[in-house]
Image (cartoon, rainbow, N blue to C red; front, side, top):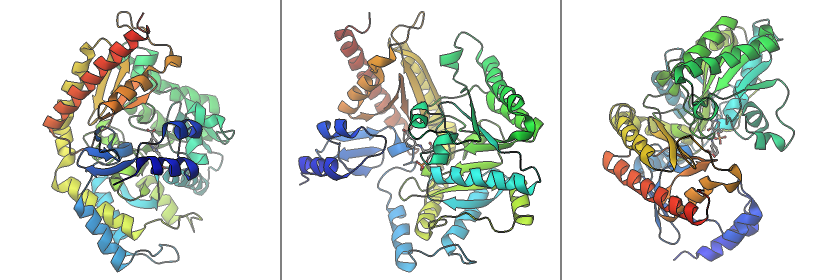
Length: 457
Ligand code: PXG
């Protein structure tokens, strides 16, 4: 029998959690998760939860996959670790590199391994600058990112990202990084045509390039769909126009696919769904379905050719670059995705089904907008719909709603007033029905709660 109180006491005594207010957590006590199976989790009190967030956007093939445990066990016994420095390698990272070259778009034949999504972005930052040095244009230093983007929590990842709360701690961003506004139609331009807005939002990149000087700009980085920012799905016109602008000025294009990779959007990678051709793909999370940590950077031919032919040593790498156990798990994970046709299933079956059901939530009095892309989705809680009136952000209604979700066994995230999900890709139609019913039930509970507090007037 698990003693929840004891774990909670030890937790608050010794464990500093990420992105957490510790005094508050100590008062409430952390929820202790103890088991997962398929799309469900159980906590230490025996409560069952439907995990609408795939852990943290990563358990793509679901919990409890024995194949992944077996792959790790076998490699742990055979060779738990050896490095890839000093002209050595092990077998799993080589085999995984071949597999990654097959599932990514054709411009990618090379991978540089990292341990996480944040590390991958640090690798990209350094490789971009090295590339421009080798090209004889060392003045091209600036990388342009976007407000409300998430690119990780290291100094470089935080700086590339556009989260103001993160920038405030530690005097970030570092020099050499600029930001433009995000393509968030509902927030910025809901009275205008969506496709028009997509072009306008992409145009902000050109404005920034001209402001900085085109010869100073090295690259643009973006998530195909902003995940942590609240599942911000750009209009269809956005990415092709971003591509056109990057091509026009010869700027490298970086797709941060830590969330959108490995089937999430209904294709292997989000850049395929949104029709653009990046020079780098940053990946992590779904590559191992989160079973063990692994990240990496797909390096497109434009950059790979130069750094391989003209470059000497890249003075950069991590102890765990190409970790054999992580790579063995990733290989088996990709094989599961292929065997069970999860990408095709999301594209042709469960993705369209979720879209129909999730958009149906728009008839709820609290829901001002509801949209999906593959198996990721977001809705906006509003005070009234015609005209749209938003809640005072200070009320944190998203957190109120999240409380009702959790309390009723549904894990749905709140990002401000956006309620978001990214469930495991193994989810069936019947489970989508179950999830939508739960969400609707919890939205009703939230509505009565907000009415009771007098917040709907
Ligand atoms: N890029 C993107 C697009 C991400 O979503 C990272 C980089 C960093 O990956 P690592 O493995 O270093 O964490 C991420 C991570 C949230 C949340 O609150 C999202 C992430 C991480 C933590 C919290 O949604 N995404």
